[in-house]
Image 1 (cartoon, helix red, strand yellow):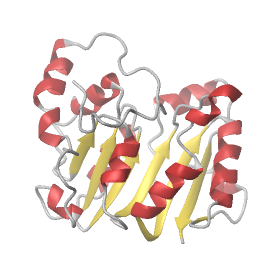
Image 2 (tube, one colour; image 1 turned 45 degrees about the horizontal axis):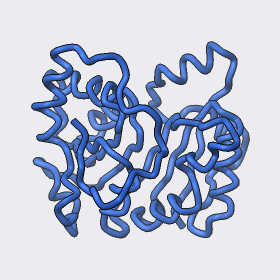
Image 3 (tube, one colour; image 1 turned 90 degrees about the vertical axis):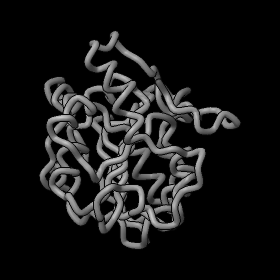
Length: 233
């Protein structure tokens, strides 16, 4: 079941389908019973201090937009137990995959949202995040669909508002046109600076990168991933 926190505002259509193959009974049970415990309620005002969203003390908050099956989000939330993580994934099957890990490997420093990430960005307090990750977003490869790509001047404005000065926006993709698109948009935005100093800086994966199934497929098919980091000025 998807959250319906902002019935007055339609989604901004950055993502495609919301459901894939029918969930297995255990997955469906987790989505119905376990997700509500972790889901953010955007119908309520955001707390001035996001650390209050978590059941155990955390020192900083990071956001991952479109976490897919949750490989990276689950790993990072385990590596950094004193950092709070918010994960956004509207695709029900991806959400179910992450939820399937949590009963055996709980993450008290994790909260989730299963709808349009722009709604969450608009809800968050100013300068409240220590980082934002966007890995392998839907590339919308046809030119007529470029406007549906998540990276845009407007979403960069939103991210700049919620990121602390010095925080990183990290992006990964195997689609060359989307990599170039992101570089151009971030270059033209006054609040972001590309951190790369040499070619290997964007060809090497991020530190402790676990890989994703999308990335493995891209490499098998001969596409070279790029890993970009932009610092909030």
